[in-house]
Image (cartoon, rainbow, N blue to C red; front, side, top):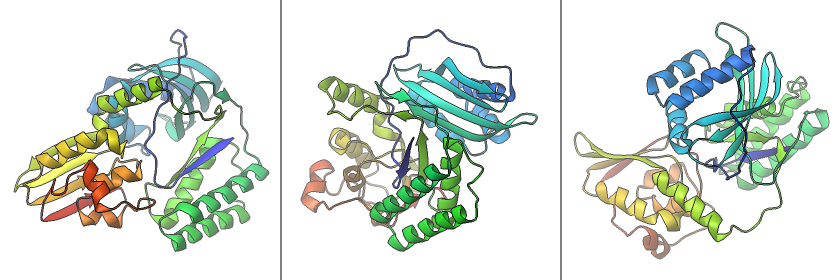
Length: 337
């Protein structure tokens, strides 16, 4: 089992993997019907349909988040059902806009319509080995210990990190996790318990039910494919505009490769260079590279929410984004929570 704590919430990067299989049908079960509802809404690219799905089926999702992910992937084709029970289905999908295969896990509560209890979807790296994972008491203890170690090493606020660690151990001692045997459900519950203490919506635990092959240095082809994906996603810059009263607005959903995306940052900041105030909309931002955080840190307000690892002096920052690229008198940051 692989559980990965995202302390600054990484942007989901789908790794290319082919999976040649004809499209399959969904099971005639509550879980299958919910899977079909998600596919229909997601693939439609229609905001109204996505909004209806979120309101009636899965209120843990956000409309903006689903629409952004839809734009990144081009939608999904269902290619396999790995296992099916009335309220639980594991499945595989393939990007319509690329060669990436994703492994999904869906648990629902029966009703009219069924509603989502847990939904997980992860890109399968080439050579990954899928495992049938059952979470037992020993595994839960191991994961909770690992989460605490990572929090205390990397989380921005050490006292809060300790509070979160203590909260998880208290939940475990009370037996709150004893009935959980599904990895995605355990990850979801840990995320809820961490956020209940930190109120940090960019802090979460993810579950992967596969073993990745040993990490290798990316080939030139890998780099080119990744850069092509970033170009298609406009380096995660979703919207840049000037609102009434000369207020600049920049919505970007991830801190991507600073060196490659530097020109995009310059263009965005240049567009709002003469505004009287700036709004940075990070509500759908999944985090990413510390260097990119520095690249867009033209407003001191960002420092309250984002603390990159290491340091970078003004000369290094100006090499990516020239000083004065955006000279607004005030800045605001929109975040989740």
